[in-house]
Image (tube, rainbow, N blue to C red; front, top):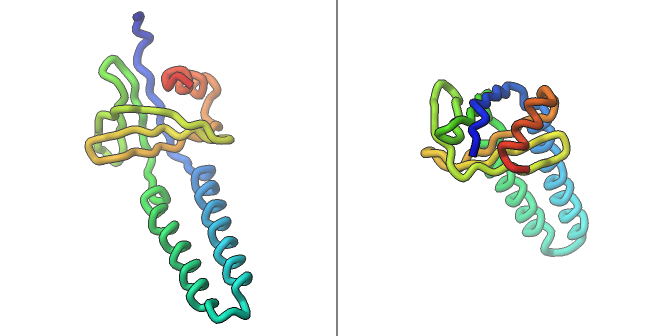
Amino acid sequence: MKWVGQYQLHVARFARWHALLGAFDAAVALAAVWNAWQWSGHVELPMMAGLSLGMFALVLAAQFPYWKISPFTLLHGEQGWKLVQDSRRSQLAQVRGVSLPGLLLVLGLSDHGRVVLPVPSDIPPTAWRELRTRLAM
């Protein structure tokens, strides 16, 4: 196999990622309100409203690490994938990509656990194509 060289991508803007998370939060909140509205007039309303509020709180708690993402640099070379984030460099294993409208999620495992890296499609087209090629998408 012929080696194609080092690839480096720096991502510092996450507006689309935060919009996606916000839309999901809005959908969960709408479902909670609809559930409480459907149970209005029933004896079980306080229990169902509490359950809906609890589910919304669980979704927000699960999303918390993804809201506070910081700029990162993704590197791909002969030694595999590397991540530089917050002046910390780590090796990534089992790197995969998930394509969403206007966004590419790079998923991997590091020595600190799971890593979800959102890459917006407004990067240069050649960098976008190269990343998709290296992720075999």
